[in-house]
Each structure stands twice: as C-alpha cells, then as structure tokens.
Length: 253
Ligand SMILES: CC(C)(COP(=O)(O)OP(=O)(O)OC[C@H]1O[C@@H](n2cnc3c(N)ncnc32)[C@H](O)[C@@H]1O)[C@@H](O)C(=O)NCCC(=O)NCCS
Ligand SMILES: Nc1ncnc2c1ncn2[C@@H]1O[C@H](COP(=O)(O)OP(=O)(O)OP(=O)(O)O)[C@@H](O)[C@H]1O
Image (cartoon, rainbow, N blue to C red; front, side, top):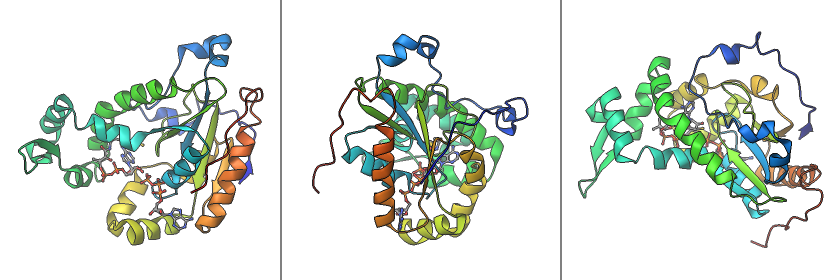
C-alpha cells in the first residue's frame, strides 16, 4: 500500500473533465463551510476497476465499523424502480425489461450490459439515467455517519469523470488487468469478452492513481489484502477528523 500526497490536477488539461458525462460526483455545499464538514463523519471514496477487489476491501472495512454506500447495490435498487424501468425500456427497447415468474417487470441485466458496454453512446444514456440518482442515495447514506466514524463510498467509476469534491480520502484498489480478468472469469463466471468490454469502458489504474491518497495493491492473495486493509484502517485513523475519536477493532469472525 502506498501513501500518496494529494496531487494537484490541471483540470483544463485533464481528459477526464473533457468527457461530458452526468455526474457520479458527491458535490457538497458544506465543503464551502468548513464548520459543517467538521460536524460530519469521515467520508472515504473507495474505487478501482472491475475485479480489482473493492467489494472484498469494503467487507473488511465494514468489519472495522465503517458504514458502506455500495454504488452497485444502490444502482440495483434504482433500476428496480418502476419509473426507471419504464425509462430504460423506452431508451433501450422493451426486450431489456422482462417479467419474473410472478409477472413483475425486471431488468434483463445481461441484455442491457451487452448493449451499453459495446457502445459508449448507449452507456452515456444509461449513466445519465442512473448516476445522479446513485450519487444522491450515496450522499444520503454518508450523511448518516456520525462525527468520529467512517463512511465508505464504494464505486468502480468514482473518478472516471474527475474527483468528487465531497470525499475526505480517496483509496484506489489496483491489480494488473490480466489478474482482474482471470478473477472475473474464474471466480465470477464472467465471459472473457465481457470482462474486457467493461475494462475498456473504465479509466486505467494510472489515471485513478492521480487522485489517490492511498493505493492498495491487490495483486497478491487474500491474506496480503487483509493485511493491507488493516494498515489502511490504521492510517485512516490518523485523519484530523478522527483524532479525537476512538474506533472499534473488528469483531472475531
Ligand atoms: C449495466 C448493468 C445492468 C449490468 O449489470 P451486471 O449485473 O452485469 O453488473 P453489475 O451492476 O454487478 O456491475 C459490475 C461492475 O460493472 C462495472 N460497471 C457497471 N456499470 C458501469 C458503468 N456505467 N460504467 C463502467 N463500468 C460499469 C463496475 O465495475 C461494476 O462494479 C449495471 O451495471 C448497471 O445498471 N449499470 C449502470 C449503473 C452504474 O453505473 N453502476 C456502477 C456504479 S460504480
Ligand atoms: N487477492 C485476491 N486473491 C484472489 N481472489 C481475489 C482477491 N481479491 C479479490 N478476489 C476475488 O476476485 C473477484 C473480484 O473481487 P471483488 O468482487 O472484490 O472486485 P470488485 O472490484 O468489487 O469488482 P466490481 O467492480 O465488479 O464490483 C471476487 O470473486 C473476489 O473474491
């Protein structure tokens, strides 16, 4: 795990901001009012490409007592809303919405994935529909975190359109592309071409690292990852917002 000083970005030069996209950003008014940011918990953004190990890290951080806002889970809830399903059917065709055995409309996720991850314009349309809603829900969850406690926003594409202003710390989980693909194919049963298509629609580890306060190298095994997360947790405790507060160690099991 490396500890990186914040890097100043020349936004005018950055390719990231030139990618006009709806925002996953948690842009907070209270950031302009320092007394308000002190009266909330410590907000950590956790990101990394698909298959890098974010969910695994998130589970470990939850054991230390962090509150988790998981963008994938939030997105699942959003696309199950009837109004959003109606919008999705209108944009991508009625065959992306199917009926369950009980007759309830539901998203054909594989069908929609095959459309959006093979056509950036279609992906942009899905992002426009989902991302502002994901950001809103994530913010609501983070706002429940008490002062002295840690909230983690886990999102694969957290940094793809620039660094969110709201977050106190950015953690990037990395692993070589071939390792990520192997894990996705072998442990998650993803097809090789689908894993590659998703990676092609995300920024690179190098681009993510530009915004990172901490980098977790997850190229080794789960024992090494667990040790890195322990180090990360202790490093996070040094943040000024937490210095006056004690944090619970993870419970056994
Ligand atoms: C397209 C959908 C239906 C595919 O569902 P599926 O069950 O196959 O994948 P799942 O949602 O579990 O996502 C798995 C991973 O795919 C990658 N991914 C998902 N959405 C995106 C996206 N818009 N851009 C780039 N990568 C993405 C992420 O690494 C994510 O962790 C679904 O991913 C979706 O609704 N995406 C839009 C909402 C979104 O942006 N979610 C990700 C927030 S980080
Ligand atoms: N160090 C590791 N060694 C072996 N397998 C691992 C390791 N880290 C994670 N995995 C496995 O690799 C797969 C991908 O990990 P994980 O689900 O945590 O990735 P992710 O970054 O959350 O992916 P996504 O972007 O899809 O949410 C999982 O099956 C996980 O159990």
